[in-house]
Image (cartoon, rainbow, N blue to C red):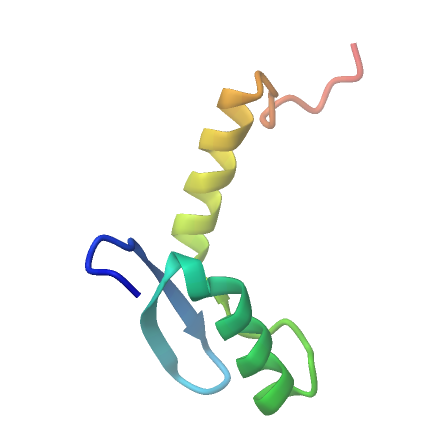
Length: 72
C-alpha cells in the first residue's frame, strides 16, 4: 500500500468492527472477513453512507436516475 492509496471505511456491526482499509485491498479484506467470521455471508460492508454516496456519483456519471420509480 502506498501512502497515496485512499482508504475506505468498513463496518461490521456483528463484530463491532469499524476500520479503514486501502481501496486497493477493499474487496479482498471484506471477502476474507466475511468468509472467516460469518461463513461467507455479506455482513461486513463499506460504510453505508460512503456506499450510497459512491452509488450516487456513479449513477450521475452514467446519467442514471436512481430516484425515479416511474416506468415512463
